[in-house]
Length: 181
Image 1: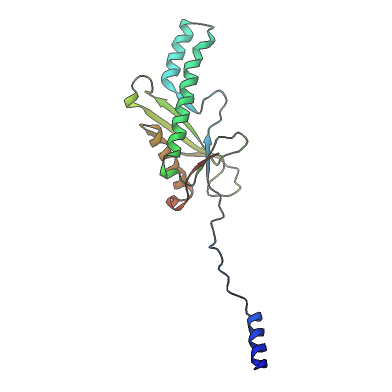
Image 2: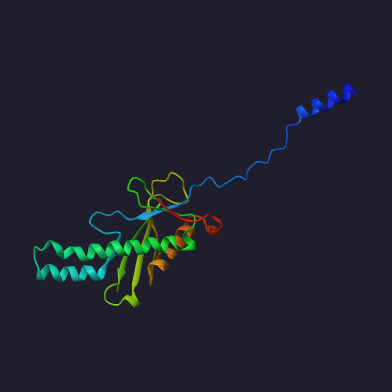
């Protein structure tokens, strides 16, 4: 009996216990999106306010307050786009980067027409670019990823996110929610 117990104990020690290994996760990090950072161009451009600004520059030369309305409108429109990003299920799994020290994978430039003149018939025209090739890790290439037009900030943000997923991972609905940094 002692031999049987010793043999059984030796077998237990020799056979490694079955360990539940976690499922292999996708090693690719979440894609990131940020606003385009072109010099002297707002990432969300209000074309109506810009046209009004040009007229006011002629009427009030040298008046520094001519530019305030457009700046405030563009800040509000930028906030509308970010709210659209947060409220769009298509943006789950994409991180919107607002911090200047982080370089996003994709950048977006938006122009809004009709915001002031006819708010019920706005056009949100967006251009999406990538700073690195989305399908090739560690690539130094950059280029245009997509463009489109929508009638609201929510729909524009949704289309931008769908374009990102089309570029890198069409099965994006399986990913956890989007976040803002």
